[in-house]
Length: 254
Length: 169
Image (cartoon, rainbow over all chains, first blue to last red; front, side, top):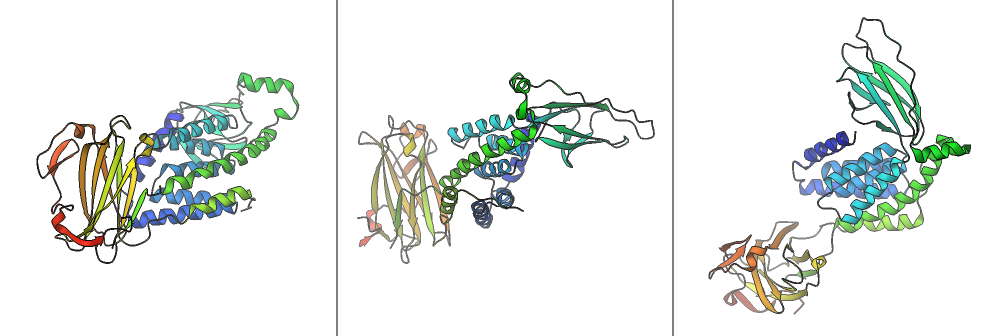
């Protein structure tokens, strides 16, 4: 999965970086960025995200990705935030300061604790996998899909086969596996096996033994929201310093 | 969409983000950088800047400033020339890299004034240029000898006496 995301990031970067933005595009990208900042100031995070994404399409600067990922984090889209930070690490690898890259890695590590995973073992290969209506890859998936805590609809589609549709509820740190074979259209559908739940990682398992609210996915979601708010506040501070370095000497000619 | 309150500190900080665009009249921005070790190989750079009121060269008296280079963090160094109403045919820079007061490399760049906006000129000091000796009328660019700009923007014969290029002098 990680490899797929990185590959997508590279494709996105290649597509957007193919042509140098014109002066008009740069100006529009800057205006969109400022809209994003203003939206952030008002707490309108969806609007801010939209502005940053539009700015990125016009003038792909790594910091725009970073800010967009921060918005996703604020909007509780933890898988999207992780993907955004991973993309930032790819496109900003050579130009971004080492401290900020390290910060993005740390955020990914922290966010990884807040997501659940859905592992799919689906036959045959080449089927499209959608999570909550969004296409995330094709079978076979080499790594589990990251999903936010809660209930999700998993759909697997392939021409000539009946669609597989499953609803799964995943808690933070939990991993759910779906093992199934698509049935060819016209044949008798075989009821897929129940969803086996894989054991939690050891650090999560300790919390399970203690019981109490720590076992509830909503508890970790609320905790994550509290932590995320502070993280976003800190992260947005990075943008302005990179936009236009000050000139060391300015001369006004006669 | 529900809106959430943003901490006052964040609001204050994001408000600072605007107002640093490249609006304004025509200008040339010189950006100096190097892969040479700083400060062991170069520890100072002097920039001279001039401009001409005609394409053939009638220049103001060059402005000059020296920048100490204590570490690689002192680069890139950025110099912005904003064209005035009269001397706006072209602008030129002479960059002199030094170590312990001795000149190690010199580079001259000339750029015509853009109709509008800012033209960026990146000048890099390459390690190869520290050891290469070029002939008269030449300079080292990207490790190879190349011709100086025509006309030589810092030729004394072009200077209009008493017209200073900037109020620095």
